[in-house]
Image 1 (cartoon, rainbow, N blue to C red):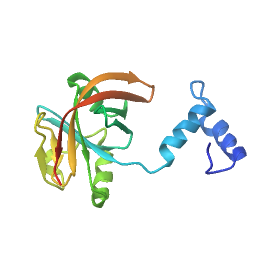
Image 2 (cartoon, rainbow, N blue to C red; image 1 turned 90 degrees about the vertical axis):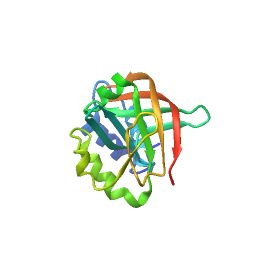
Image 3 (cartoon, rainbow, N blue to C red; image 1 turned 120 degrees about the vertical axis):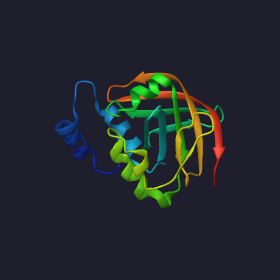
Length: 167
């Protein structure tokens, strides 16, 4: 149920702004539920040769018992094709105190910064050698095992190959 606004206003908004042939009202409700409630933001790191990117992601699901993860990335993210090709990424848990820096990194999904221009220090992950902020709580190195195109997003299924606690 969507309880933010009443049923009539919800339907009016849907028919005026969101109705598309491939999206029905129930799909809109599931998106609203997924994006309306607070969730953890994690940093995704990737590196291949001289190319690197580090950006926040909030569409992450983890099944801790099986060490499996699902990530949702927009097709507009320039790093997506490289992640799919190499089947590697690193996900870091980060403290709330760094939220301003994390949101600044969100501007670079499509245009990565120079690694030397980052306002914080980095360490390299143990297995992949991907950059991780020195203030991260921990990181997990993930091997992508499957992908699924959902239209605006690509779902990436992965398994943890290494975890390191930092703080």
